[in-house]
Length: 312
Image (cartoon, rainbow, N blue to C red; front, side, top):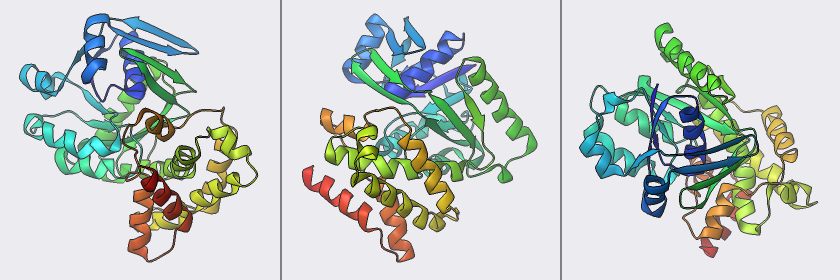
C-alpha cells in the first residue's frame, strides 16, 4: 500500500518505519532540521524490539502540493500535534479534492476527527489511537520509541454509518498493519475508544507536565495518584456531551492500566521540557468545554490547566 505520514515526529516515524520495513511505500511530511536530516541521512528509529535505519522519502507541504496528487496514496495518516490539525487541513484542502484517500488520525484528543470529517467527509475519516507507546525525536532524523506500540482504529464515529464494503476496506488496512508487525485492532465504536484514551491523557499528561514526574512516579505518589484518578473521573462525567457513555468501570480500567505502565515521560512533559506548545486545548480544554456545555464542575482539570497556563 501507499502511505503518507503527515507529522513525522516520534509516533509517525515509528509506524511509518514499520510499514516501510514491511515493503509498503511510505512518504513522510516533516519540516525544519528534522526534514533536512531525513532527506540527507535517512531515518533512524530505535525501539526495544525494532531498529530501523534507511533512506526515506520526506518533504514539506509546498513540495507535496507541487509534486504529488492525493490519489498517489491509499491512506493518509495524521500524527501531528492536535493543535496543528486545523492548520494542516486548511493547507491541504485545495489539494485533496474529491478523490482523496481516507484519513487516519493517530492523535491525542477527541476533536481531530470532526475537523477531518468536515474536509474529507465522514466516510473517509478513521479514528485511531496509539496504545502503550511513547515516541520522541531525540535529534534530527533520529527517533526513540518505547512501549508495545499498539493501534486501535475504526470508522468514525462508529461503524453504524458505514456500509459493509467500507468496513471491509478498513479491515484490509488493519490486516496490512498487522502484517507489518504493528498490533492493531479494529473497533466498531472508535469514538468510545478515543474518549477512553482521553481518560488516561487527562489523568497524567497535564499533571506530569506540571510536576515534572513520569507516569510511575505520579501513580506511586500517595497524594498525586488520587489526583490522577479524579482527573480521569472528570473525563467520564463530561463524555455524555458527545453522547458517549463512560462508566466507573472505564475509569477504573484506565487507572489500573496507567498504574501498571512502565515509567515513561508523557508527551506533554517532553513538550514542556523542549519549550514546545502544550496540547492543553485538546486534552484539558476538551474536558472543560464539555463541562461548560453540561453545566457541571471539573475542578481538578480546571486547576491543573490553569496552573500550566500560568507557568507557560
